Length: 479
Image (cartoon, rainbow, N blue to C red; front, side, top):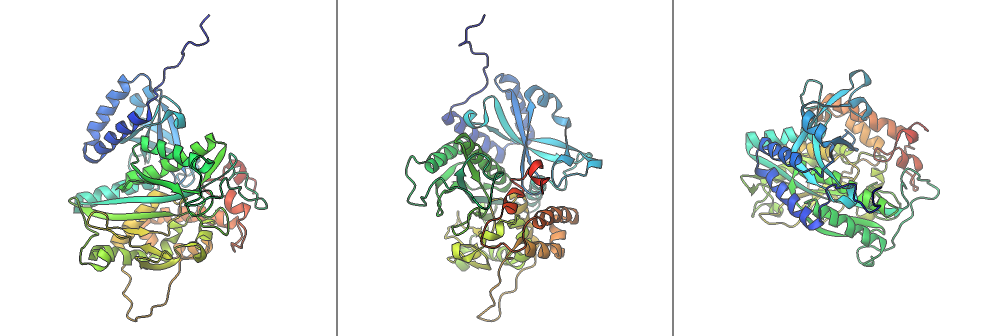
């Protein structure tokens, strides 16, 4: 008989300080190393490291919901060239009659994980979704963004960079979104805001634990703090290449949800879970670089920006109404666009006005950028950045106003208005592809149909439980 204290498992657990060092080195390699050499290196590492039991592969559906598959390490190493899954089980992917899709491991995306958040003996990597014929799947916007940025770098030597300010709320109870009742609402866990959160209250402990995990994963967190609204938080990580930044957004939300769950709470990224207080945004800071130089910067340019940057801005503003459904992808997202709560609902650019959908932060040769403030935290980050890039580079520029006073334009007030503008846009079909346009419209239509057309003053049960990040088979089929 074995002693009760005998250690039966010996899975990999790495201290946070060592994790951060390993992940930062891996992140540096992503930028410069040959992907094939990295695959060889990581394969050799996985073969030698006996304490890793499984590899989590991640991908994102067309609406932005995050999906994970755990593969046995030995199986993945042997079968990486033939990993298939049922695409018909993923909203916005294949029809049942053509269900099989493939996953191709993106080896440079490897991240070692904090075991107290993800469990021990695992690493995570992202995967490209492929069709049956092995080509990049049209509705996998991580793959589409990756292809577009690779082509941009190859043809013009341009790299796209971003960092987002993704806000969320911490509320009482596990699974608070799925059990939402409009007559009760969410219960906040803190009445504090920017300056009122105590060092060891629930919100602060949640922020500290989430930030520690993210730093260990190589996110290069810059600042982490309670936001303006009670129970609201924001964790900011470093500027990086757009595909990797989107990966980090998805993992950021996953870490926050798991840390909250460990505390018996829920981290929600609904844009406006509670009325009469500030909502949550995902302010998207963006710039382009060529040969290591920030080409959005010009010392003597208007507000310190180059002509290229201004062309980019004017194209985004021109197409703002029709791309709004990408930035605000849920019924709830349009509650956030309320000017009484610092909401960016005006189709304009400004260095100071936070009601403008695009802001120009103060910057220098290194930090000059634009900040697109109209993006909600529940949007698909890959689709958002793909749309921003293609619109800013391929769209039609907004004509400069001839009159001193120009009529102010506003973003759509409800998802129904946004759907109508998206549906009638030829430009959307051009940049996303007609098949993706129709798929995306279908899912936005069916969720909008399950909620009242007018938002009203009270957050409705339907706009929460049928939300693409919240709903499940039971909730959806109880309609």
